[in-house]
View 1 (cartoon, rainbow, N blue to C red):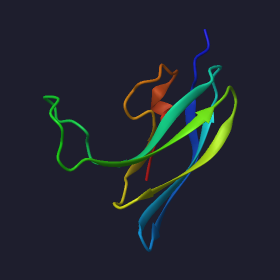
View 2 (view 1 turned 180 degrees about the horizontal axis):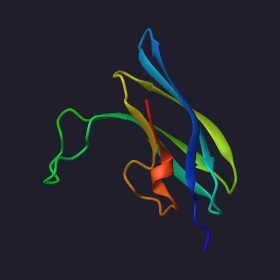
View 3 (view 1 turned 60 degrees about the vertical axis):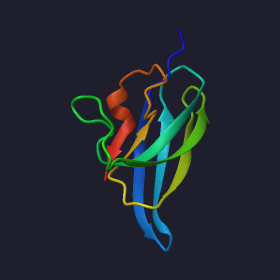
View 4 (view 1 turned 90 degrees about the vertical axis):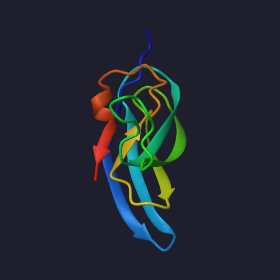
Length: 104
């Protein structure tokens, strides 16, 4: 079974004239080929009861990664994100999901 394993070995956050910009290197250290979203986010998505949190924000980009492949992604944001993560909606089966997140 081919299963991706995403890592974010490098990331940066920069203020721009239009807001903020996140740059991240995303690595698929697993064996699967997959199209996946990468998100720059701020705040908690849901409260403890599963209701949406009004302060949550994210901006996204989609990349395709094959086994052992890495790509750079740039995500412009109108808000200051506190993290970058792969597969924010948990749509992709992946190994070691905790490695697919970096906080700023």
